Image 1 (cartoon, rainbow, N blue to C red):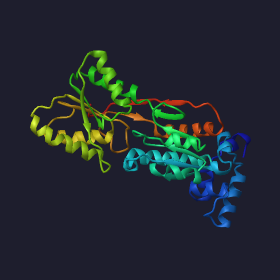
Image 2: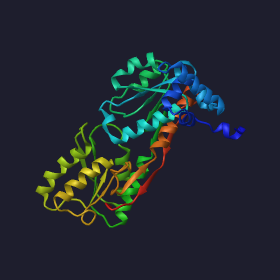
Image 3: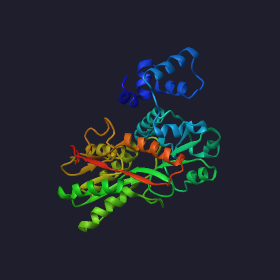
Length: 325
């Protein structure tokens, strides 16, 4: 194998050649239990054959206890959302490719995380979220997937994305545009709502807000149950477009509108956010690069472990126009 090609060898390539999972390769390379000695030796032999060398970030990460990264969940069972399932998958892959071993923690297990992991990635920020502060006090480097603040963080550029999709609706002739999201009255940042408001302020249009109650079971079902009885009593809906905080909410709104004979996008346009596979097939939505967010989280984790100054990275989102608006 040439010098250049050896540099590009990854854990994924070793896993393919060995016919095992990426997790098994990670265990073998890091001396973790759970493999037979014969399989461990075969994986190590293949890694030598392809001249596998971890990246600089990986060399920083895989020393000692820092090889274990705690992925900490939010307080509202966010793991049930399709978006977070995809994010978990990409995070796990990105960590394994750097020789890392991810383990999962509930938000209320933060106190025990330093005993089992040398670093952490925090998901699902919520009001009164003290996880980052507690980990800093324990000397555990962490990265938040969320809005800019203290420490390292990465997030999609929600605000600019929602300003853009709202402008798109205005330019298409919509004048009564409502925003639909969860727990909007809660005192924490709502960048998606802020982007919506920014676009309305530019044109002098009035805002219309619909705050959905939190429901861990299904955001789509919650949106449907919220709008279905109201559409029955309104007769004519007090909006001609719905800017929804997520694709799942948008799907519930679509179902309620269609069940009440309201044409989409003829009478009401509907937009979402995430561009989830299959779920967003009909939706005009904002696509966020989940793989890029996961990869940047691991990059920032390497910087945190190396003692570099904290920073926030904003990942651009893309407007995808489809049938719903």
